[in-house]
Amino acid sequence: MTDVKAIGTDRYRWDLSCFYDGPEDPRLEADIQAIELALPSFRMSYKGQLKEKLGPAIADLAAITGLTHKVFAYLASVRDLDLNDARINSKMADLEKRVDIVWGEHLSFFDIEVVALDQADIDRQAAADATVAKHRPFLEGLRLYKDHLLSEEVEAALTKRSSFGASSWSAFFDEVEADLRFEFRGAKLQLDVILDKLTEEDDPAVRAELLKIVNDGLKGPFAKYSAQTLYQVAGAKAVEDKERRYGHPMAGRNLSNGVPDATVEALHAAVRAEAPPLIKRFYRLKAALLGLPGLRWSDRNAKLPRPPSEATAAFDEALKIVVDAYTAFSPTLGGLVQGMIDKRRIDAGVRPGKASGAYNRGVVIPDHGPEAFTLLNYQGSVRDVMVVAHELGHGVHHLLAGAAQGQLMFHAPTAYAETASVFGEMLVFDHLRRQLAGDPRKLLALVMDKINDVVNTIVRQIGFSNFERRLHGAGRKLSVEELCGLWLECVRELYGPDGDVFTYEDADHLWAYISHFHRPFYVYGYAFGELLTHSLFAQRGRLGERFEPLYLDLLRAGGTKDAKELLEPFGLDPNDPKFWSEGLRLSLGELIAEAEKLSYLLGLKF
Image (cartoon, rainbow, N blue to C red):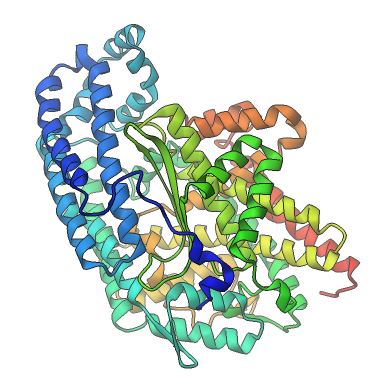
């Protein structure tokens, strides 16, 4: 495990005092009781009255929602610092059950009555009430579900039981995965640590050994457990989808993303058609640069060899790179990033029991304002620096949208919530590329790393999505062996048959650790956001000084606009199928061409 003191992450721990003084702070229980009292009052005041009282109802709903988000953002943050803390897990489960019961009992009527309102009634109230006028996008979002809502009684029952539904399997999956240990040469490593070691290892034989350890470690009980959780999630979703009259398994997610089915299909089709020849060029170049006759799956994320002095970046150095890159583009964004650092909104180091991966959690705290908390497992690689840029991109998005839109509308849908994070990565990449312009060897290593990330975000995530589509389309429980076969089928479909680019030994059980599969069809949003952002980023030269204010307005919009509306000021249309093919050429195509050119300049043959 990385020495957190040597790399400097030990000094970056969350300060959660803007929520509560601790899990036993009496204000926490007081807020829960306030929610439990406010919801019956809400129902009494507004059930059957929305035709005339929509504005006050929205204001009260925002207050209740804000208090609820405050409670659970705090508890989730505390839990993620130590997933093995039974006291916090128990407290969170108890409070979730209490809140789900009162939300289901007293709030289920609201969505049903909103979708039943005549448009004339909404228009009339919007003309007279600023709260209704501001929240038109919120109301329009609810009304998209008119054909899919069930009766109030059924909606109430579903909400009350949600703590014990498919989502509970996802939460427990995270806890079990945090306990996984993989033995490598006398050390027992967490999943994040061994995957990072696999990426950073220079010796291909050791990479193959590491992948085998991971794959073998996922076999047996964990794979069976993962298969069962996927069955529970997919099965529960199938039953509910049928009751809600969704036409296919992805329909609900597409609706929540505000993206037409045809656009989602065009994205998948573009990746299937355009990506395989591009990534074949990339991986053949990578094999040549690594001096390998061919690649095993364990070589997929391998870095070009670096001098030891360049192998690890201290966390302070990573933060400086990110702040400088954001500030050079926009002092507004740079100031927001620096504010998150100064206010101790980053928890950076790897620790036993801590949640794996990285994320940014945004919340608008009542009587306080928007905050954004970033969890990292930083170990010092170039990729880790990009992860910092990515998650802090989510952070500035949450802060700007939270201030502009408030409780009910600041979260952007998944499909374009990734825009700010990918944009942040690209700012840092451009910043580093300018610094290395006079050193083609180092620049080539940087560009190859970036291509690797883009491939993982676009091609790998669409492969994940294809796996999900077939999993949910199976209509039955799949065995571990069937899931392994399905996984490799989806991998080969995009990366090529055995021996064409890769051989796939010790890769069959890797589906088992992908936690995003427990949030059905979440993953295609990564590819959507990556390609959308590359197309957006390419407009900077054309728009000049107009670009930054337009981009800040895009972030401030939060969840009030769909992707088409967001990109209209930039002259882009994501509903045009050509948008995705052109996005692949702007992202992978141009980066691969740059890497090939640098390789020629260095006299490298491939």
